Each structure stands twice: as C-alpha cells, then as structure tokens.
Image (cartoon, rainbow, N blue to C red; front, side, top):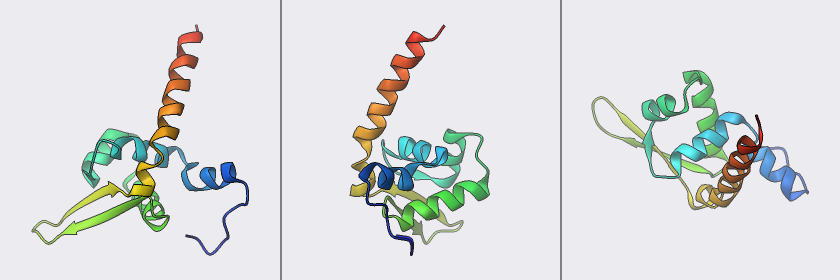
Length: 107
C-alpha cells in the first residue's frame, strides 16, 4: 500500500483503491481470467499505454493483481487478479446491474 494510511471509512477505502475509471475497467476485463497487456489495452480502449501501465502498477502495489513475466523472446507479460482482486466481483456486478437499470430508465 501507499505510505499514506488508508481512510477509516470502508467506503472511502474501497474508493481509494478502485476509484479510477481505468481501474474498474481493468478489474472488469480481468475477471474472466489472465490477460496480456496488449489485449487489456485493446479491450479497455481509449487508455494510453502510459496510463494503463501506471494503473496496473498501482493495482499490483495494492495487491489487486499480479504481473507475471515469462522468459520468452519476445517477453510475454500476463496480468491476473489476486484473491483480493476477485473479491471485488460482487461490487462490479452491483455496478453493472445498477448501470443496466439506469440505462433502461433513460430516454
């Protein structure tokens, strides 16, 4: 974790870990299983390589995902959610359900 202590409020703690738009989309795209960087970048769309790299590093530092480098030429890197990362699935499902309901109510 960061040198800064986590907030006392559990909701604020969750937000501090996944509040960025890209982090939520990374979680969404890694829930089905491991992905390589290029596939993640393509599936998320609209994110720069620099921003995606920074978000992945932050999430790895927070313990939400792991980065595995395979000793191949060219090198292959895969990202996988940790148990802690997978524990956010109900949160993302709730967000998806809410979003579907919202979209069904808007003209």
